[in-house]
Image (cartoon, one colour):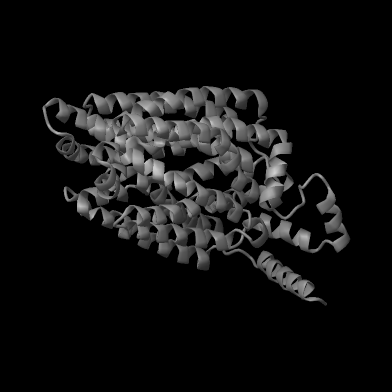
Length: 469
């Protein structure tokens, strides 16, 4: 027996033992609790940069570029982290070969390390280093793959949205830390990052010791390991890569050839134009509320300082608005279908964002504005998760599922990238105060084009059996 055969026999024995080991009573509930903790960590890491945007920009970027374009320059320089995101998608495909569990832990630990580095940053390069690490580990959503492969198909979207609703409410510590730890002393912003970094470390340990590998992965991997070398060679030479054991290039080729996935990537890319609105909401609120103080004759620094407590109040209701639409999307989706849910959520996104933008610029109650902002972001990502996660996962075979979800942001990102680059150029020219206007200008046509392509070219996926895709 050669070295490769010996390694494969060990892997077969390990996987078979894990598959045969009976699950403890209530394991699914136990697993979902673990995934909720991981998802909370992921949501905090994803949102903290946006909810602390103007403050971090003021601390790190304003001394070099000036106050009025600090956020714009931060966005432009942070676009360097896209390189890390692309490398992350290649790395993510490894979970189709080595399993989901190890990456669930490593990704969470990596997010925590990125938060810690940002909290220690005293200059732009150090901040970019931390942001790059976060950008590398954020896109993987391995907890979503765990949910998709572990719950009954009939309730897949419902359970997924329930888990994500809890995770969305879990970002409440950000405004709480802004209010109680930072307060009016913006120099204490670093502690808002350090505390969640510790949470990430704890969550990574819990995932490593308490979660089990998913059954669909173990079954598919065992099926491949039991094949003869002749059969594997035959499968590798086929044009249809359905039986390949994952990989970046095979997944890209598969998505391009597969009509369903191809149009999901294209339509999803246009829908993602709305992401620009989710990137600048804290800055939009800050300048919106500051406009009242500017009209009273205050300088820009004083106006923004007076606006920050109002923004913090608004952010307390942000998770509530976001969680509501994150929660109901699954119930709607499992009853009326994925495509109709995307239409409904995209419509809610455009309406609530328009109201949020108007309200923050006309001195509406901060809690109302925060609720509308959360509704906009929550409904947008409900639509985005359906197009980019749920429908893609339900259209890809198990052995390529994580790889398909890894390349999806790259293929969709080609269409999103055009709008993203243009928006950054425009914001850097006109200044931070126009971030909300520019976001809305890109979100509307993106949703219209994306939804039209989706309705015309993508079939419904509600209720599919993932093991038979």
